[in-house]
Length: 227
Ligand code: E4P
Image (tube, rainbow, N blue to C red; front, side):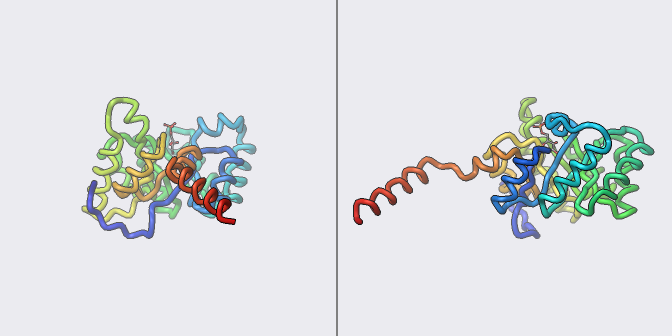
């Protein structure tokens, strides 16, 4: 565990889905700070076609108060700029999600110079996180679960990026992604991730402990017996 001094009041919770019901459920809980989507998550909800995709992003923005990541499909600089500018124009909460590729870095620099916020996605190394921060990314998304799936500790990457960003006071926020379970969230908080984007199941999993259930059942039983 590191000993960094965090300059925000708490780790932000984003939900990693394009499902409106799940976004509403997390929002109703009162702890939601934003949403991340990706083309796979949009496809899972059956959202396709330019107009429907754009309307879906607006619908998400109307549910939550925080940032909503919307990913470009293009992989060339001109295409990413065109798509990103159109996405950013949809709603002030939109953050343009750009893949970690050469033209993506050029696009992030372009967007940063224009005041358009970005989330550099598919981060799997500290070097990638460093160059994304240099280009002015608002967020970087290291994919913890996919690293763990490949016998590499994703949490080590969070710690490494935290150290580098703190060394040079980069403003770029570490948005821990590809989170699979509650302990990923807890470990992200220990390592100083700025944001954890999680499936609803992992957020709700934080509520669980059998001793809480046993303790509450006993309190209620004792109350009834004492009536
Ligand atoms: C986040 O921005 C990513 O889209 C997401 O967390 C990827 O998660 P997965 O590895 O579970 O697909």
